Length: 328
Image (cartoon, rainbow, N blue to C red; front, side, top):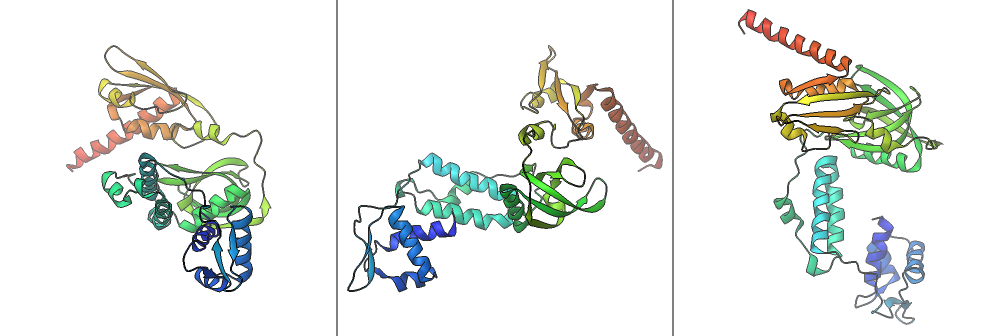
């Protein structure tokens, strides 16, 4: 809710109070100039339809027809619960610096609801708890600045640390979309340095500057959602690979529970094992995922991924063999 909209709502309530308020009292209460007062008053009269009049003797403003009030919205108990639940989820995933803002917003909404659907937000918090795991916190101002740049199509100059290459570069990007994945916030952006679409982790952006005079046009031939879906989990390399993995019965119980990718195909076998097929743009990312299942997962295709896993297991075995030889 914008500051002006919130002020107009509260100001409208003032016109219904007894004793009625003078212009000076309202200006002092909301810390606004007289010009702002008249602008808001005209908005309340012309767009909200309230009959606000002034007593010519006392100079006090009042609602001449108290039956006319701002539209009241009602939410069911379930909708209030969902609203508060969303606040809890967001406060966990965005980072603790956002919680005061989210809590303030939800409480303002709750205060304007009819009493029959009031619920205690703290009670809801006790009933439901979100635990996203290892969350990487994001600076609030950085998040807001880049989100605004996405909305207004403004280019952003960033100083970025690449963990993969262990290097820092300065580049200009055209931000398309913010994306949250497993506790980390990213921005999907066209990189003018690499002339390609890239993902940038917000916490690795060491400095940023929104270029107010530099705008960009979203490419007509680019579907950001389709681009995001091409990745198996997150990473993109530009080359698609068909992957086929066989999971033994114990791991298959967990694999069949989820939809891992829009392109996936799951084949069930009589021994209760299964084979998962999908396309991915990053074999490195897929390799790391397959390794979490250990000997329960066996890659069938492509040959490149099979070789990557064979080499990874060989190196791991060598490390354990050295431990045995040294007696550790």
